[in-house]
Length: 337
Ligand SMILES: [Zn+2]
Image 1 (cartoon, rainbow, N blue to C red):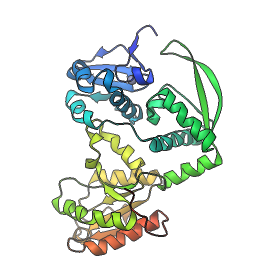
Image 2: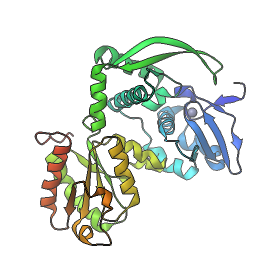
Image 3: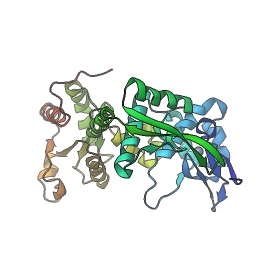
């Protein structure tokens, strides 16, 4: 297309092209064929190169493109808005996923697509960014290994298609999972292949809960090999609010604290249940028993583990047993360091 420009976030890594920036009163709107629709505040637009960097910071821009291309754009919020404060806050923590996580991202993308559409996943301009590989070459190395060494995917003949944004024909591949690939897909959905942590959904700014979680964390890690983390520990959060969804997807299980009736915690638990992740509900004993703070009835059928300051040791035993049962672990898993 004549009226497209190189995307300043992803062109040098993923070759993205974007529409000409349009001024919508304080914001520039631009649609990239890799990053998707992006809104820049004028300050973010002007200072982008200074904040996110130029040539030496390709990795950082690739990581930003990875976040944007995976951002959930369902519903009303089509554009992701970047302002200078967010970019400054997030710049030090932008990084691409490890090859092991890239592998899971790709298996998940193929499996989700095949289950929904009933046909192989066709590579599109944003595929490499969504997987989180650093370059096309790195992506080819990854899918080559998944195909030839691991036997997890099948790659069908490359297909030549017209790329509208770039205005020329390009080669694309189609991908499907082998039976072993489907086993991994399902195991990952259940949380067995996911990150080595449990995601804690909770209400922030609750000192009693915070100190309780700090007290039990090491014990849970020792008993199960899993660390408990909440969104504050993923400092990438500065850039995009719902990067949290990524953290839930990559978690082995989710722990939802219902003590404070936090709507976000219920939402996060429901999202995890929808993904087939084990969800473990916890609640402070006094709040659970009081009429006005009792958890929402929909969670009544779920096992809820009670916590109480001073009863950390008992809680650790209950919680560790529940985690092991949920993940189908037969014995404590050694902590990986
Ligand atoms: Zn882009």
